[in-house]
Image (cartoon, rainbow, N blue to C red; front, side, top):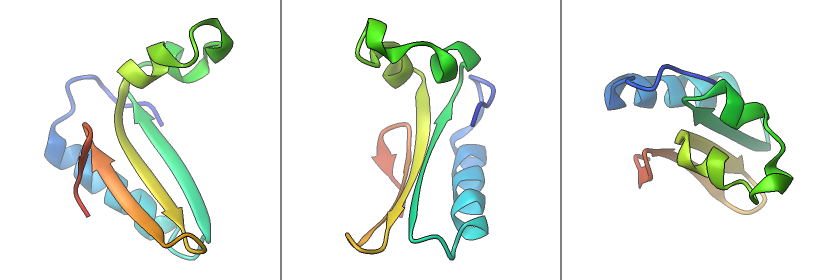
Length: 79
């Protein structure tokens, strides 16, 4: 998902929680929230994904079989 670079932490948190809530029945979910369309779509083979990593603002990860249900905003776990 792509958002504006200057989005506030509170808005990112709300978005991430909404994503998790919408997909509550999923057994596995992995969503990255980025601030760059290019970072979301470029060929990661060129740099091993370093450019994309630099533009990740948040993640939503869930895997019921592994016991993972985590939201991170700007590198900090919020749940």
